Length: 207
Ligand code: TMP
Ligand code: MG
Image 1 (cartoon, rainbow, N blue to C red):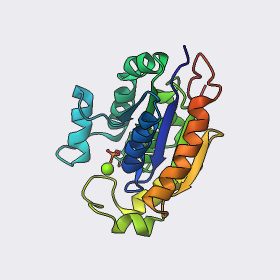
Image 2 (image 1 turned 90 degrees about the horizontal axis):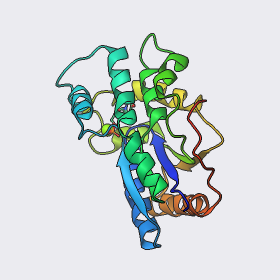
Image 3 (image 1 turned 45 degrees about the vertical axis):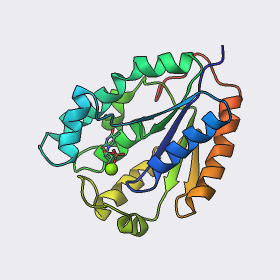
Image 4 (image 1 turned 90 degrees about the vertical axis):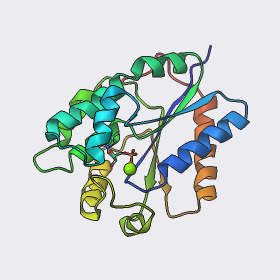
């Protein structure tokens, strides 16, 4: 049986990732393909609830420790992801290890190398969409500024870090286009991957 594809959306806060994930899952399902949405952090688990409190600024946590929690939150869901992928379900994931690295490395005293280590060996995405947003535009969008990390200065550093994480699996989408236009581009590219030759077993990230 064909495995599902692992598709990830990345980008700065308010780039429109969640909307695009939802639309892509709906479109794939409408075409008869098994697809499911996931997101990181997954705030429903015990680890995810702690991360949620930290992001909502209800608690403080040492920076290395919270970085490891974000990574642990991905690892705890790997068995679930593997199961669905092996059953032929495509996963469309809102943020992944690239967010982990880009955000922590934007903090004082962190480098990309250290930040990548806990996520080394995770299932490697077949496709990563990077929603490229102009930071002044992101700032204007709803709710910007409520959670931790949502400041323009921080997001600028995040964006620079993303630039250093680009891989051949990445596709850049201009986030200033209309929701529909972005969706059409993403669906075209995603379908090629979902219907194409998927390498089995899956590759491992950053190995
Ligand atoms: P969300 O707004 O997509 O739910 O993401 C929550 C915030 O957490 C967002 O600012 C990005 C940040 N983040 C990390 O710092 N490390 C990670 O590993 C992930 C997945 C997100
Ligand atoms: Mg957010």
